[in-house]
Length: 112
Length: 114
Picture: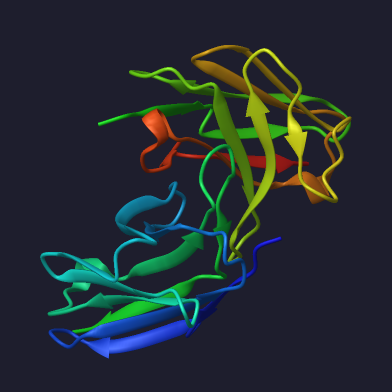
């Protein structure tokens, strides 16, 4: 089955700086890679996703890059703000009726 | 956007009793729903895939007789934790994929077994 590795487990950055979180996956059949933000006691919220036919996608301060050959994808958050503090999860799926395989999560801390 | 409604948000039950968690798709039909479990400070782990009108598919290591799944309609899936024990205390989250688009998650159910 799919295995998703995520690094780092904790990331502390100064407000206004950029944050990068990296994930690798093992199953070459995976073709959908979402990123979720989870706040304490709540379900995960989709912040951006990318499909395997695209190398990069951007939405305002958030971007995701995908390298299919190397089987890794990354989340980039620019101009970080205090409200970006949360746990972020990457995930992978081969689509259809398959569920998501999640990484272990990154606790992002934005220092004022 | 598509909404998945999950109830209850919190439940406390006594050891040995059963608890039912509901997951509803509010504005779309879901032939498939996914159930995840998340222990404190850990990731989400897929437990089972719920299929409307047929049996659920369970991930390896998940006891199907303990975690009963029913998906009797296109908008409702339920997860029943039977004979709950303290080690079943966790955050349970359901998800669906409306129209094959992005996965939408419920708000989760915090189960505490005392």
